[in-house]
Image (cartoon, rainbow, N blue to C red):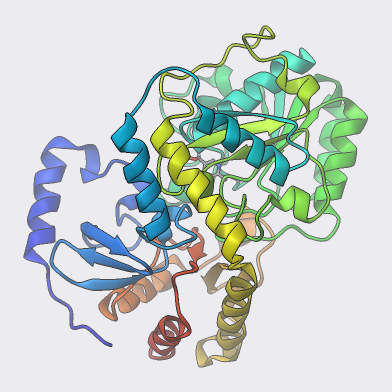
Length: 428
Ligand SMILES: Cc1ncc(COP(=O)(O)O)c(C=O)c1O
């Protein structure tokens, strides 16, 4: 179902207007087409696996709003739950029965989370978890990994991935040196580096934070034993281990990667899928740690819209649907089929293109050997990715506009959709 390039006057004029009133024309830098060139596409609707653009094109979507839409766009059960909740009131700023049900469900599905607190974004979840780790341990230093992105809090904009990689920004202006002075950085998948950092500074460390499967330098799975080393190292030095599962939570199973792989972090951060497309984040962990939060403990954390009833309705409907319909084996089957087909494609035969895949997550890396860390990811041929992105867009397929992002297969994609995707890849 090839579509010819339409130079989209509507998109161009929208973008011109946007640039007058919105910095760079976008409300989040990853939406700009900075690294692939061209003008961002404006969307007016999404149903199932497809987006409709302002110019009336239908695009097969593998960006999935960057992760929340595991059920696809406008899943009827989610939309109905949102309608019902909205009709009863958009926010009360008070406790609701639904937030209790939602927290019980999350804690039941993620046993390392004895208690959980709801927030409005992944960034907020991580910021709050780090403050809690610092309050709990009485220490200030944090160890993070090169290329892992944990939201845009000042002190986490050190060696952060995706949006910052795409923009060529290694850190951000406006972040005081004092904010990042407490953040140590190790290469992802480098257990030896972690051990030597901890030998020198372990006693000052409040937390080790990691994406258990890295998703912000493209999809980079952990090497065998890496996460177990982090667990052991954190326990040995008295720091908390924080798994940032904003992308991976409920992505590979109706639980977290920590639960699935039986590595228990002290705290887990969630976002994206748990909000079902509405703004939502959460962080949770051992009761002993979580009970240091206000109002029980001295670590302050709050939010006017936290536990918003409409977002909870979307999140609950999403998680309940995932549990009832169990799309995970199908996502894994489709993801695996994509990865295997890539491996056999002509573009892969010279060994310069690789696909990483887990469940419905995948990244096609151009011009680099299999990637284990940020230094290797940076060897990718981003110009070839840009050409690939536009080739796919011309064929009616919407991908993340950056080499350093993950593509998402949703439960709404069909085998025919994947065949369309693969046929477009074959023609590249
Ligand atoms: C692993 C990870 N953590 C945190 C965040 C921040 O989440 P949000 O954009 O909802 O603030 C992201 C966003 O993509 C992410 O991928």
